[in-house]
Length: 241
Ligand code: FPP
Image 1 (cartoon, rainbow, N blue to C red):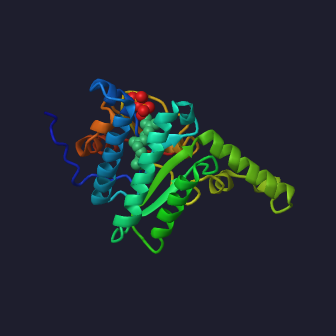
Image 2: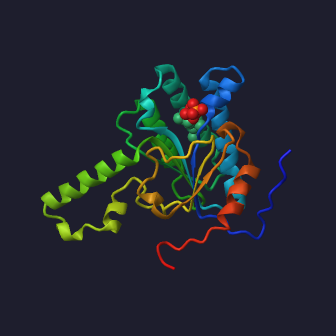
């Protein structure tokens, strides 16, 4: 039994981003199809988002589907899309008294009409809210995001709305899908993999990382507490001294 980690009196990161990895391996361990792992992963997502809200995290971002995940078998892709639609339906219907703001990052174009429609409805249902911002990355990839930002900027230059000298870090940030979201303070990846996998590469320039061996469906409130406790030991200098 893991010892409970106390986070009272610790600094809570403003923005935590999660790479929800290990669903497939979790399912394999119990001899179930991969989609069972994703179902469990979606439950963990809900539980961890609730906990983040409780402890005062202002921004949560989660990697649900990458631009590379289309390479997976169609039935797995379909099962992830179905989980997203189920989650969004639930959010639209049942989170009426919630103050959370749901947002999405990624290229919506290749998504099905149903997924696109539910994303729009979910966003609309959050209008006027002021609470925690929950961002779900769907068909998201940093390289795709940076290409998209580059196209926007080049177009503005060609249209004479911008000069090349106007291009700076701030302008690029403002042309990313995450334009109005602060950079993540802490990026958490469970399941033992130690890489970013095309997630928030620009935004992670000064993020702190927490890698853990636990598989995402098993990721608990206490696992998050452990990450936060370690985050509190980091000396964030942002290139200064
Ligand atoms: C990575 O684990 C996980 C995904 C590609 C899908 C994540 C999706 C969900 C948790 C469900 C839908 C989300 C929401 C927000 C309702 P993996 O399958 O690559 O795991 P493995 O490395 O063990 O195979």
